[in-house]
Image (cartoon, protein in one colour):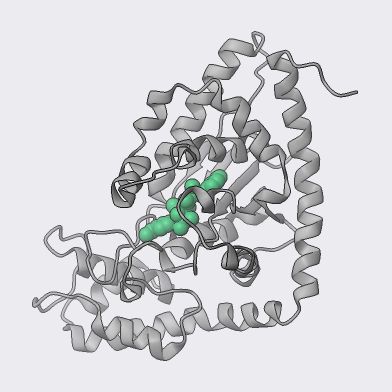
Length: 336
Ligand code: AMP
Ligand code: TRP
C-alpha cells in the first residue's frame, strides 16, 4: 500500500518557539515514518507582512536546519524552500481566480493581522490562505499537521477544492484532493509566558513572552523565573480561572515526557517556587540535543545546501505534474 502524503510548513520569520515546536514540528517528527512527508520553509508567506531582505535568506536556512535538528529524517521526509518551486506561485494565481473575495475577508487570522498592522495591509496578506492552499494541493496531501490556529485555513483549502472540482472536474474524476488537518490535543495551543490568555507568538513584541528553540539555558531560566503566575498554592490543569497555571503545567508535561496524570499528582500541592526549577530543567534538557544538532548542521553549510537542492528536485517533480493537471482542467493549452 502506498503511504498517505503529509505536507506542512513554517514561515522564516525570526526564531522558532515552543509553540511552533510543540504545536507543529513535534507532530511532524512523531508521525513521519507512517507517511510520505513534504516540509517546506514558506518564505513567500514571510513577505505578506513587512520583512527585512537582509535576513530573509539566513532565516530560511535557520528554519530548514531546525527541521533537521528537531528530528525530521530524510529517509521519510523531503525538506525544501517554497520559493524554490515556482509552481506554488503559479497555482496560487489559478486558485485566486476561483476563490470568492469574501471567503478571504472572513479569515480570522487576516482580520487579526490586518488590525495589528493598521495601515498598508498588502493584497498578499489577504491572499495568504490561497498560497497556503496551493502549497498543500500541489502535493495531493492527505494530511496537514498544524497548530489549532491554522484549522480555518485548511477548511478554506477544502472549500476551494470542492469549488474547483465542481466547476472543472468530471464526475468521479476530481482535479484536486481534499486534505484533512492533523491537530494534536495537547500542545496545539501553547500560550504566552506573560499572558496565559494569548497564544505564544513570533510577532509578540516581548521576547520574554516565548521560549525560542535556540535560547541558551540562562535565558530560558530568566524567562521562566519572570513568567506570569498566580498567587494560588497547589497547581492544577484545566482551571479556566488559571490560564497560566494550565499552560505551564502543559509545557512541563510535554517537555518532561511525563503523563498528564503523573504531573497532576506531582504538582497538586506545589507552590511556584518549587515548580519553576522543574520546568526550567525540563525545558533546558529537552532543547539541549536540538541545539547541539542545530550547531553541527550550521557548521556544514554545504550539507544543508545539498538537502535543499535534493528537496527542490523532488518537490518540483510532483508539483509540476499537479500544476499541469490543473491547467489542463481549466482549459489551458499545455506547453508541449
Ligand atoms: P507560524 O509561526 O505562524 O509560521 O506557525 C508555524 C506552525 O506553528 C503552525 O502549524 C502553527 O499552527 C504552529 N503554532 C504557532 N504558534 C503556536 C502556538 N502558540 N501553539 C501551538 N502551535 C503554534
Ligand atoms: N500558514 C501557516 C502558519 O503560519 C504556514 C503554512 C504555509 C502552512 N503553507 C502551509 C502550513 C501549508 C501547513 C501547510 O503556520
